[in-house]
Length: 442
Image 1 (tube, rainbow, N blue to C red):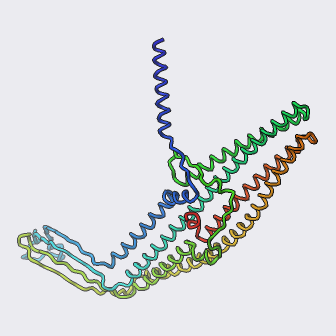
Image 2: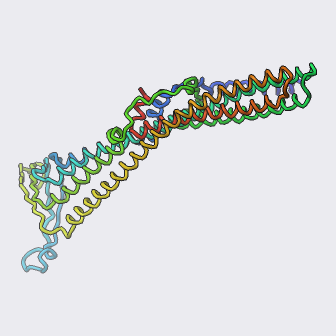
């Protein structure tokens, strides 16, 4: 018996330790509004972080291009022993001369430098790298806009799922009340057992819908946590659930011209177009002469103690005469790339115009849908109330009540779907005009 008690005690202690570790892993839910969720995603989302690194990388590329225009200096020290084969160097044996010379020692130490005085190609490439930095920043804004749209859409999906679960819970409560009413009227002899059975069936159906709605709500929250790149043990709560049933105005420019002005994709292509044009000019400038100044100063001698100062300074003029068609090919390649970007720009502008017009129409239509759906919910609630009174008075069975319940369920679904479409259309219009981050973070 003592061994059994000892085993039970150990098992209880292990269970308590496991429960303590689970409690330590659990974190209190993070309550987030939609703007807070967007700002958190723009800090933690991996795609945004990679875009930030791309910007940093493009800045380093610009520094590399600039370094080619700056003076270069180095410090060298060498101490060498040399022995040469004189017969191999001349090509034949010379009578009276030894077959080799050396060995002899050579010591040299000192600084060397070089500087480009005139090279238009390097200047063009530096300008092109600066515009590539601008283009990379615009691409970063594109990633931020897309990330914001995904977070907003997922957050709205969570709000919709929460509204579905709330509506399902309300319908369960209503079905329970109607079932209790039918059961009470059956006891009084006013209604039949069939009426009670119908009410019970409707109650079970509503409970099943509630289970599905709660599952969808949890799955939507998991998707939001993934977009925010949160710890797997960190839960999220929505602070904007009451605002789901409101219809805020857009509040920003919604014209095609606004989209052309703000869309970062346009800015990225414009910067890329300028950079490619500069690359084309840089390829053509390779035909021009280049002037370079270089030299070195240091101690030279057969050994370190015997070294004396020595130097060499020179100016080099390099005039390309024949490059095997390389310059012509580089220029033609840059010209082709420039034309490709022009076609991409035309396609992008057409796509943006389509997105803006579509989003405006969807927003207007969704706003009208919300008004109709709100009226439908009000009428459905009135129908349920009238049907309950008729059933209570015994002038009708509860078929009318069940029908009214189904109508209210459809009206709730229509209202939630219309509100979701309105809020999603508002987000789509913000993205189409390039202002979604501004819309949801201010």
